[in-house]
Structures are given as structure tokens and as C-alpha cells.
Image (cartoon, rainbow, N blue to C red; front, side, top):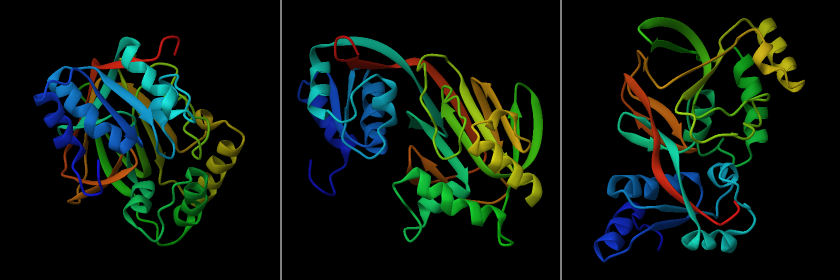
Length: 257
């Protein structure tokens, strides 16, 4: 694969030539494009960690520092994992809205280091120029209105204790999306939330919301909506319709992973 090539097109061409499985070496954003083709054609997918964070590889039990070892998955075992979908676009890890997404869309502020991104977000969250999201969540027939600084929708539960580190997902087949929200509370409460986060007590912090559902909708009054999908910048149109597809993606992993 060369610079400028379209990974999804190359994957389809490989299947048209008789390939029986698809593998991709790259970061989570690149993996998602090929995983979507594997899902579309109902063939197994192999994750080869070759990016920065490699959340999917980690949560599959792969050694993120050994991409060559992941090639053993082609002779390994198959398992079904969940994938998330927003407005028809597949994601294997998460979708972010708000401050973090704004950083991903700004090349001058983007960083591959999540801790550094978090440290840069703090003054933005506390500053006078912060621009909270006015969002409406429709879940299980009820509607909630929130002013949010950050919204994170994840494919399965990250069990988050820190905004700087998503932690690991203990399952990839729970069949539910998880939503984490940092509300645009007043600065004193936000400082308290940051303090709780530093102590690893996010779920108990005021201004922190979370819930889970197999499908829901987010309505955003401004168009278009800038988001980060598996860490890559994307532009979506409101409303944002999220759903989970339980065990839809056939994944091959090395024996014992």
C-alpha cells in the first residue's frame, strides 16, 4: 500500500481476486476502513498493530509492540466482536465530540499523545472562550438536554477512571455502546471534577455522566458536526444516529491471545 492509496478499495480488490480474509497494519483509524469491508463482505479480519495507540489490538489481547507476531492470526482462531456505527460509518473504538474532537481537527494543536492532549484541553475547558456543545440525547424513548464540553461514545465499556487514559475494555462483545459526558459546569465544579479524575474517581465526580444503550441519537443544533472517529477527524451531519452491531465483525487472533 502506497501513500494516497484507498485502503477500502484495495481490500475490495483483494477479495475480488479470491482473498478469504483481510488484514491491515496500521493505527485504529486505518484498521476501521478495512474492517468495514470485512464486515460488508462477511470475511474474517486480522488486526496488525502498527500505529500509535492501537486500542483495538490491546483489547484483543495482542502485543502492541509485536506487529509481526500478529500475523500468526491468519492461522489462528476466530471470534466475533461488536462494532459501533454512526450515520452509517463504522468505528471499532470510539467517537469523540467537543473539545477533544476540536483538537483532532486543528493540525496546530493535534498530538498523538493522549496525556498531552488532555493537558492542553484543561485551559481550554476552564477558559472564557470555551464553547460547550448544546446536545440532546434520545435514549430508550426519553430525551435529555445537556451542555457538554466532551462527549465520548465507545464500542463497549472502557471503565474510565481518567480523562487522560481510556483504560482497557474487558469485553468486546457486550452488545452495548457506552456514553461518557463531561458537562459544561461552572469552573469551580469543573476543577473538582479534574481533581477527582487525577485521583481516579471519575465515576463519582459531579459534572461527569455516563450510561449505556444499544442505540441512541444525539441532536446537535450546529451543522456540520466535527468529530473524531477512532482518532481521525471526520465531519458528520446531525442528528447522529448511533447503534451497535453485536459480534458482527469476524476477527482472527493468534492462538492463545
